[in-house]
Image 1 (spheres, rainbow, N blue to C red):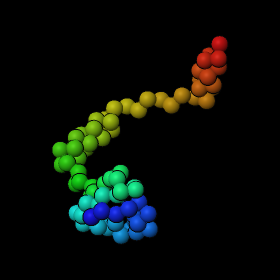
Image 2: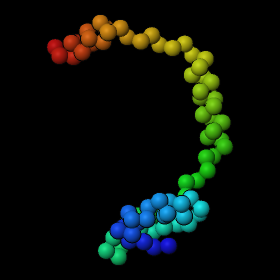
Image 3: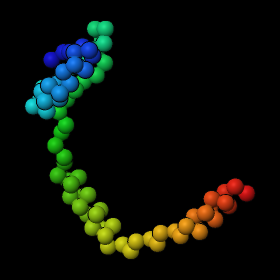
Image 4: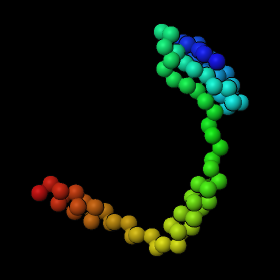
Length: 81
């Protein structure tokens, strides 16, 4: 489906719904293609597993102590000299 930028702005919600159903919308400006609205691909299961492993690793590591307000100010002051 091809739509002008003006049409796209007017009917954005409808175009997003069409794209989410698999329709590809080409958006033109003065007759020239400028953008394409396509559905978001489903997440890769491998990526989801990897993210789970990463979260588990982060949870198993001790948290670094937060800097005190005083040490943060000292660091800022050191940058000035």
